[in-house]
Image 1 (cartoon, rainbow, N blue to C red):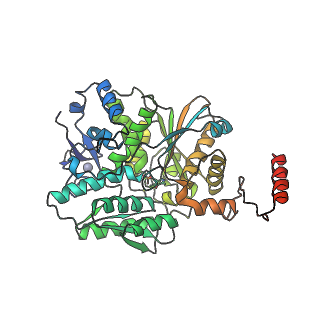
Image 2: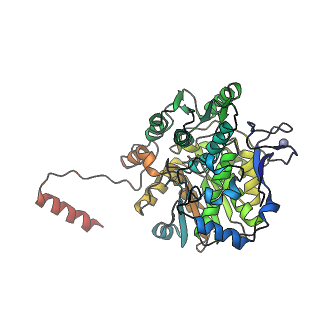
Image 3: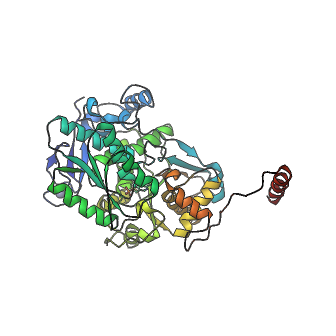
Length: 443
Ligand SMILES: *Cc1c(COP(=O)(O)O)cnc(C)c1O
Ligand SMILES: [Zn+2]
């Protein structure tokens, strides 16, 4: 097989751009690029042959194919030489049947895809491995790249920092001051990456990083760079593979900059095109009510889209008012009979609280997705027997302050329905025993 992939404008303008060019937008219409693949070449293999190959590689030792991103290298980025791949064995995150939570919200077949079980604790690793690998390849070809930079709500910067540290490539991260969690701030710092904390919001950081990059041979790592989308679309490949190539009825994903919902859509579309699956799920994009520009647009049938100023939300990684991938996301949602729904601070916090009582450890964004799932189940849009996958985007351990404040009832405007607290007792057998028995009797 002679595989190839390239950048091309999402509106189908004819210009094809090589993946090792430093270019993120179409000259003709100004819209974003996406990565296109030579599908005719890929179709030379029957679906069974692809499935066998992916099964054979999955979580095995042979480098880099044991990574679930690189196990699908032919469908992700065939142009990379293996020697340039920068990988931490990403992907292969567990898919958890949330039986108890499902039964509480009236769903028999609810699954949580734990994308936060990742090297840097979020799904951002899946895309960053592709982008940083391409940078390594470009540098090896003699391209002048002084550093790689991104603006971030905390998880992109963590992933960029880790992957650049693995590869030994300089990186710079732009963060909105006091708007990310402490673990997220520590991640780039501990990797020795230039960490710039700015007195603005994510949208402000995004604008500045683009200016700095274009003026200084610095490569931009935000998801407007569609190499990231190629890695993230393996979430769909993996999901389907984990269900023995069955397709769920609904996939619910929290959305901020809207790259991931587009990526997940692309993954399913590619599998369908290659005949590995024969239907598509419905996609649900879950937004925080305080940062809900896509929800507002959905409400008027996507007739228009207006950026907003995002307000402070517990779901800090999706506190974005002017999402860069909005056009991609709208197109994707239209192709998947998509739904956009939102959750208030109260709803997202309690959805996380409720989920955690059933053994999950939800980040607030997963809380948004769970709250939206519950809402759609209540409305009858999602039915009891539907197979539903909620994409848990980050590890709850990155958001302990959110969890702590929830249980300490310190989140303003939120009534913590599932609050719980430790019991302080003297180290005395009698006192401990009588208290435990009293507590157990309450149940
Ligand atoms: C980045 C991120 C999101 C949002 O993904 P987008 O592609 O920006 O829509 C959601 N949750 C977490 C934890 C993230 O890090
Ligand atoms: Zn164009």
